[in-house]
Image (cartoon, rainbow, N blue to C red; front, side):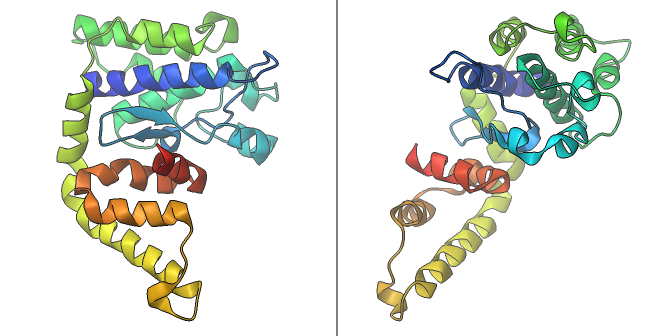
Length: 239
């Protein structure tokens, strides 16, 4: 639903803005590989952006081949704050569609809601069209500005986002949670001759405790983070 997606990407845009401004020397820190897998939604309904910098390490061909890559990046230009904004807009289009896409995300955004779109849907399409403008100068100048535009639209609360996530994937999380616990136990046994007393890294030990203590919905963030990389997983554990 659009209000759920708007709420998720409001927070994601604020997170991206924080990433851009995190360098002590003032130069923007670029994400470089934003996509749906970079957006981690927790059981608390909060959204985190993970994997920043991975696109800068992946190499030009890998980045230019992404559907979410901005037109100027696909043409060989350097990445920028505005190319990150384009990628975030493309990820939002993919989330609204509910499936991967190969078409131009700007065209998809323009046709998402059809001729009978509500006022709120039409305004959302306008925000996305700006984020996905082919000319970088026509996009939002910052992720903060993108977030501000999204905040003018109807959005779900954190509690409503958490409830939606639980309803959609909560029933499937019990089995996956147990699989993670088994994997952690196997890792522990592999570290010593005495499985019962095998040492376990503190981060993994905390995760196993959480697995046995928390309900299934609390595993939303962990499972999504596993799909996005170990660094994201360890960030969730520390939080």
